[in-house]
Length: 305
Image (cartoon, rainbow, N blue to C red; front, top):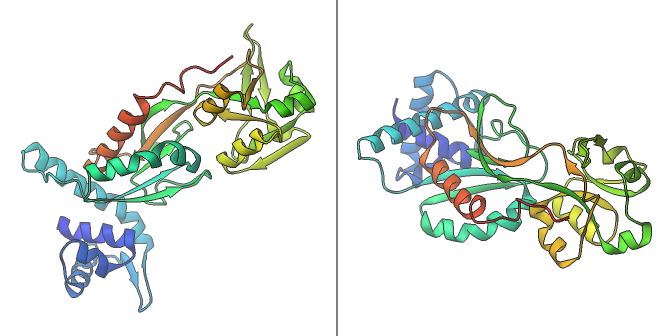
């Protein structure tokens, strides 16, 4: 199968513009349209819906897209094995990540990455809400939950220690909980997608903590807003250490129930569709993030008492 036509289809599915995709690959608009039509005849399905107003990906196109990317990656890997692979990393990398983490740690790194790979186009989807990697046609995603989908592969970026904390003003007003059962009497701030968590006492006793079942609970879906509300004294929240380590060090936030650890040991994972070959663009971005985040920071390793 003609991999240049596959590249054209992948670009068109990302930009929803066949002419623009063709220009990126050095094709005239008429040539690009002809090649897409030829590819559709080859696979026996309409991959893109076209109208005078827009282009959209068909259901068959959505199903075919990951295989098209796989075939392109296989070709690049084969050429690289023979020493004749392209030296430039190019194309479009679609990356999804929680906005809170991305704003703090990924966005500051992007200028250096773009300088290193100027021919690579980054398409970022940043949201603290849950998303589907396959349906969104993402090449790579950052998640902080255990991988359950067998069609995906994961590479660990860093540990993700979780702690309870509150502002000094809140604790001065309402006091600090001594036992997990005391949390039910407090004002709590919880993430909408958060699940109940186990807290383990020094003697090994485990208590289940579910803030959304508390009498006084503020539920939201944005991590930075949760942190700001905690800083403003709105209540007690459970946070990733990477999000609040500076505020803990400065005394703006104080750890609550410091003798209790979370039963689970979450981590930050780089997730990508399962494939025999990891494309060059995905590989270099993963390596870059692991080098600059996973190996150079120690804020995620030890929670303050």
